[in-house]
Length: 52
Image (cartoon, rainbow, N blue to C red; front, top):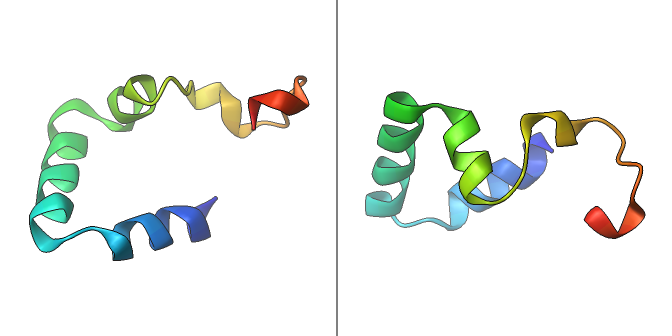
């Protein structure tokens, strides 16, 4: 999962990186995940293989 976040971050522009970091610092990672419709408990092995 960390490798995916690193790839996403590297593909962002400097402005996108700053906005992403500011959002995470202000609202937390749960907010980012909820906007992506991912709960923080989804890090565990999913019961539904189609959820990936």
